[in-house]
Image (cartoon, rainbow, N blue to C red; front, side, top):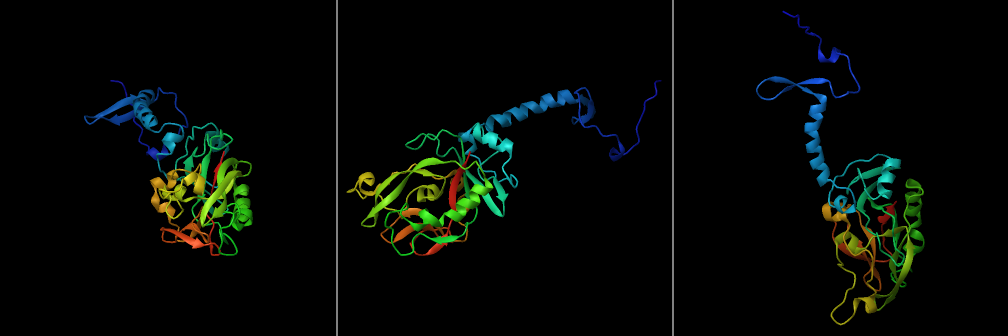
Length: 293
């Protein structure tokens, strides 16, 4: 009878290997007893399951806008992650994932939200980012007026600059510049004019946060929303972050939105998460949105 060699070592004492060729054998219990299977055949069996998962987790903005994950992606965007953004696969990136950079949690709010929008076509694949918390506090204006709309406000002209500087430092060379339509005139408390502007970092709108206007003026059956109030915007849908995880709307701090509500007030989100509006001279949180590419 041939002699069978039996190792009596503990698993922790066995020699470790760092790679396999496929011919190695493993022990497996199939319910009837201990059997042997090669690594290659085990891999074939698992590959079917892996492929079925890949069929669900498809590449591209459509699929990735539909899945909330919330994974910590590290303290900077890697070259591999930027490549996944630029090629539009968004591999390894999902809504709710985030980077923590210089103490700020920057969370993915959506993919290709602005693609093919603007008077000049936005063609670069991109990720919309919203910080978890306010990046400081500021007034919309020094007095309670909305003259000049969002573009005419002190927020647009100066008060966003601190957040912009921090964002551009965190994502150096990768903040997307694209075209958006912004309100630049107000009449009788409602937007009356707007134009296309280059945009990098802006306050969000009610539509981006809630999915629809709440306090900002809309047509009343008598006025055309375009000619009367210039409610013309490329931000016409809710960001996937807030659709998939509504709790992300509430930060326990008030923060501004850029919609004009009256001659004295802009839209805002209350500390409790409810839709609100405040007089322009209030100092509320600055929680902007921006895109990286």
